[in-house]
Image (cartoon, rainbow over all chains, first blue to last red; front, side, top):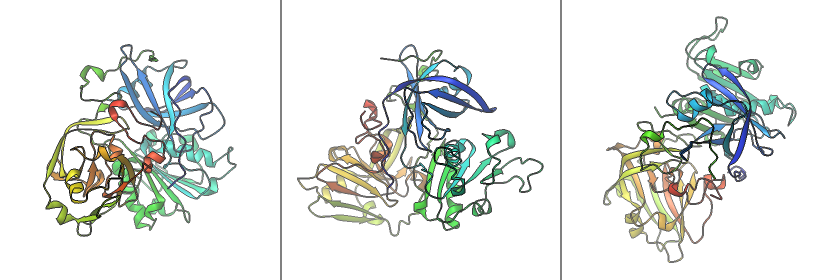
Length: 240
Length: 203
């Protein structure tokens, strides 16, 4: 059992201080909270929107920014065409606006930069893993990038979140549909070989993506003899 | 008081179903899969379900034995704390009442810990799993329960948030006190009533 996570704090009003596009379908919003977030890498916040008649809609979004002492967090939101919250956050939310948030939440899918970790993300499943990679690169805990390897899987270069930060030796990017011309691996579904070369001794695997992706990767990790108790999974989206 | 979001109208409300508790949306044909652990592979040849702890006589059922008990079906709604609900679904299996009739709780029992073969656990007041409120189910919409959704068998406590309906359930441990299960240790509510939005500890 992991260390118990702190009880999430009550709803608070957060102010949008910056936004930036990550890809054509993903946007990062930076929020100022009423105090330090205190989040761990891998945790999420719930965002709540309230209409004039009191109708509310809430969704959970992973924190992309690493733990630090600041009062600000970054959430990266994938735009889902039929998602009433994600479309609002993409199309209507502006710097200076306020939204309600609650968190940080989650005590199992967290990494404290103290043990070897293999991070495996599919699509926007990269978001909580990015908080872990950023934590590993410092400065909060010093440079712990020797402890972490990231394998991220996306359809094409246009879908890659945080591309500028995925150049390091600790990162492998797998393109499933369309690879860049200079990519020697070529396009194809993530395979055991992609994971084997990134699997540090005694690493705990953190797998985040769709249910189909998570099950596929879990199967690959089991074939690589990673014990079940060292595989932590966060799934999202509809099941296959 | 309500803290309105500039410009938010909420397009989901026009079609909002009154069966949806506050803060929930209708997942319709989707059934999101959420679990913290790797999906296990469980052989029904060795599957068992136990009732143990604060009981007069512990009992264990095999797959065949539990199927020989009176069948029971739930038709209604389910609600996940991550804000999706599924409306009008059907699960079949056996009522927990039937199991508790065969392994009666001691007078001291007040709570249960549902436990799974994966190590997952979740705590519930005893009164939330008896009186026609809880099932051990192995069919969804007339077909075997998919492993991703807890098959071969899961607990079903549909009046509470769905993390209480432990996937891959292996038994109930009767207790004379309450103690937190897996998600409850991680900040989630001990009871989890969706109509009261008891999502997190302190709600």
